[in-house]
Amino acid sequence: MQKIQAIRGMNDLLPENTGHWQYFEKIILNLAKRYGYQEIRFPLLEKTELFTRSVGEVTDIVEKEMYTFTDRSGDSLTLRPEGTASCVRAAIEHGLLHNQSPKLWYRGPIFRYERPQKGRYRQFYQVGFEAFGEKTPEIDVEVILISHRLWQELGIANHVALEINSLGSNEERACYRKELITYFEKHQAVLDADSQRRLYTNPLRILDSKNPALQQLIEQAPKLLDYLQADSLNHFTKVCQLLELAGIKYKVNPRLVRGLDYYCQTVFEWVTTALGAQGTICAGGRYDGLVELLGGKATPAIGFAMGVERIIELLFEFKKLPPSESLADIYFVAIGEQAKAKSLVLAEQLRTTALHLKIIVNHNDSGFKSQLKRADQSGAKLAVIIGEDELNQGKATIKYLRVEKPQQQIEFNQLIQLINNDQ
Ligand code: HAM
Image 1: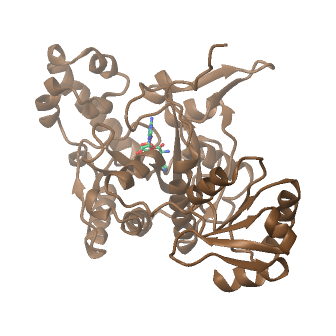
Image 2: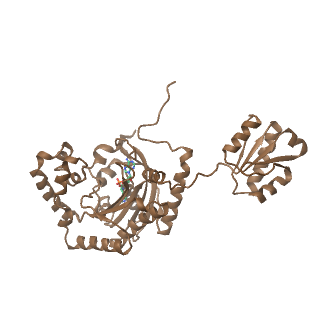
Image 3: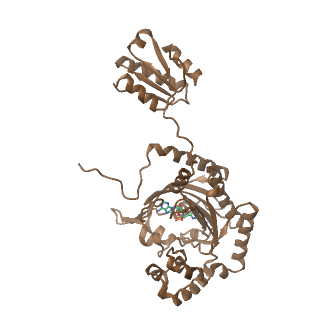
């Protein structure tokens, strides 16, 4: 039979690596609590309209990257290509925004039909934080501080850099958009096919182009920051001042426009040069209009999401992952039917009293040598050996696998005590 393989760009996370993810998730769990964020979980599938309306019709995500299908009742459904829209939908649906300013976080798989390469997958994992109901520059900076603290706790703060920008209000952006179209129209001959296509639908995205031939043109394009009015400018200036006060280094990147339509005012990205082309590990910004756009009462909001694979890759790159845990502390080696039964029962008694111990019992009929080899591979400190001799004497043999210590015999009824004392 031919083997069936996983879908391109969708990865299995193997046992040798799940420990790394658990380490990361534990830090996130703790971080979220310390900043007052509560976890929310929502479905992987949503009505397609949720994303077309929020992310925007003329974005790469909606135009090219969504996994969309019609279900058996004829509804168009989409595997979530990001988390913010679902988070807002759920918050509105369950009244979480009524006279409250919830702070929510989520984790889980996200689906985008992109061209897979290192750091870019079709199923990847995001952890996202979203703060609702506050519009001050302080919350913008607190959100950035959460991500900054995460890099510190993971030990990668020196390898990532913060870029920020302001997208202003809808009106300011509309004004800028017109100017940008006029500018690029003058240089239409230089634009590549992608930029030509975006010129009238989403000209801000041209600024994001990586095409070397366009860099000079983009460099000289009008800057959005020059089109901001007093309110937006004050907000952005305050964000910059607060970042400085908090000791966070940043760079204003006027080309940072983000690929989703719901953003306004402050936007930011954490980037690294250590991962090749896919260097953005975390990104977000303000989306004050989204709650209303999705049918709720106008509510300011800001948040960010990070790509878990990229962060784990960075931790690998800089050797910041803790050593993997051993699979077992105690390994029962049992030879013969009766010995296997005895091991099964003894191990179970041990698990009742010693809650912290990891215990593996050999249940198959392999020989002594191969069982002992497996005991060693498990990382266990002790092998408890039970064979015919041991059964006859009512004692187990204890073999120390990690230290030079003579093996010893111990009566079955004292085994639990010995192990508890020993560990
Ligand atoms: P985003 O920039 O589209 O923003 O994605 C956030 C992060 O997800 C990226 O910075 C990157 O680390 C990771 N990521 C994106 N695409 C891929 C991929 N194909 N493979 C691996 N990792 C990827 C959002 O999704 C917004 N919802 C963020 C947000 C939350 N804004 C406000 N609140």
